Length: 168
Image (cartoon, rainbow, N blue to C red; front, side):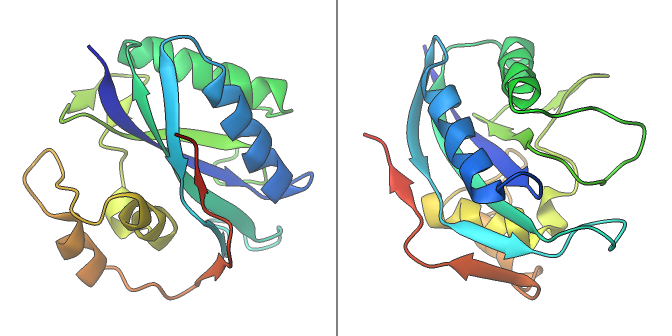
């Protein structure tokens, strides 16, 4: 049985919008994964060090039959194929960042994976694209996405017009 999953996408290196498009294409080719839609692209200032380019962010909606860590492995392989180098520096520049935001109603807390994604409740570049895909979404703890949006203004993010994608 497949589960609905939302994946955060971000890039600020090597043509970020193209990085996100290539990542969506790669996700759509994963076995046991069906890419359903991708939000509009959003531009936002980087977290952490400010001496790096702005990020382009989006959220993809998929249905998957993969187990959580198998999905994480597949997403990390896509990051590597697109030039991602994992460094000790947190929030530094990167060609591609793919994060499992939500996976059904699961709550996962392992050394490798935390779902819902930590701090997503405070990141407008995650919440607003997520709302584009499903404004009625409810978090696993019962909190409506609309409540999270009220507590997290859209300051600092700029939508890139006409960039949403529906895949089926």
